Image (cartoon, rainbow over all chains, first blue to last red; front, side):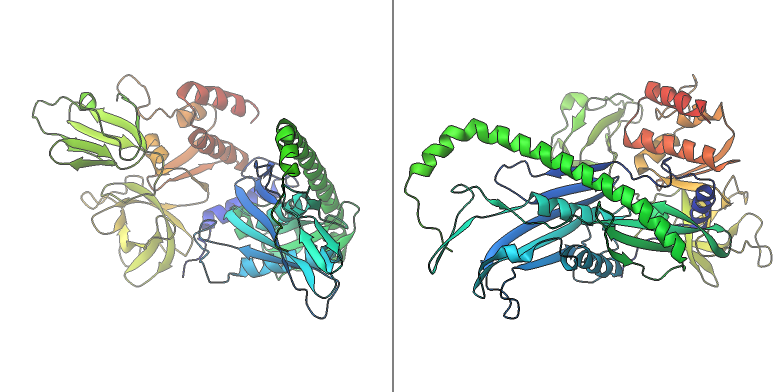
Length: 310
Length: 239
């Protein structure tokens, strides 16, 4: 069973010594992220496909939807599932079919951050109460693992949800019509708020003592392997915390949690700004493309279309 | 070395690129495949290199993992210890390399170094094992346990270029001058392992990070000699 290679004692000690002097291997301050890159699919008909890179970490998220029946106990809600895939492409330590600790934590935190916090209004996915609704599915693939997968995955998921458009529907009596992208402009999802995950890692500031901790944001894989604990805070840009996750590791004081929340809020605002910026850019690029094809599109709409399945 | 160009997998090496040899024999190196009677095609992507003196031709690639060869100097990480030997990691996710408990300079049962899991050694690949001394002379020749410092990961081909040394007129054969240039400004210790590891130790953590960072960037961004000189000067000015 492959496992991640642990850093050598030399590297472990060096990383700690350097952090105690406010130094990191990639020469950035302790509270900064690596360059974040967010791209959407260039195909104008594809919505909800995002590719996020934070340094060398790379995450792909794709949203898909289909029409199905809602859960009998939740007649007015659509269905939204998140599935994470950690394959050997991301890291040789991950195998297909074997659930890794990282994978369990990743899907659990994303579930809590995005689904349980009600970021997506699932009621808007309902078509006919108790009979038809949209099944929304988010597939997250970690393509390259160089630490801080959680923040990257959450960012990719939020970006994909905000970018995604579901097909438009119309209801006439008992009949439901689902229109294709070409027939009717697809509809954006209803999002109530935009939460982001921010992970803070902790390192002992003195050998063998856990009283005083150094907190570091956006750790690389090597740094992650040397940390003594971590804390993941999910919050939106208004500072509304929806989840605080701490899985083992060194104990931290209540007051430092507050400091972490404040630091995370800055980062959540940064994520939010970046996302809005990129979405606006993408929208503009898409409009330009559609503008060029505008004439063709109008001709197509006049033809008699086959009735879509719905 | 001359560079007749870059080849893609399956491409045929042009007859004109083959080295002219006196002996009339041709030695094929990594990345090339001979299809009888007289076709030589590339099996991977890389730049074609020839050596007229040896009548050798091979492909220089920057990808692929490290394949141990006898005589290579490597940086190995101890994984676990047993009565006879240490099991060491040369590259992740490959079988362990065996390092004898007594394969150190002047080591006997009482004086052998006590290495723990996670320690680093600078060693040489012998036939079936790795060793931290030259078994012919019994001298360490710079090999042995590495204390403190930091290892940086580079591609195996970059590590090879780092170890090529300088030619008679003082030019770096591998086209990497980062260490020489940095050595004029700061003092540091360095060990290069062919398995794509560079170990650097200097008096301050900052210097180590800067030099390691320069090496990694020179490798990833493919800096030329001039670019390396410029960047080393620029970065070391602040240290």
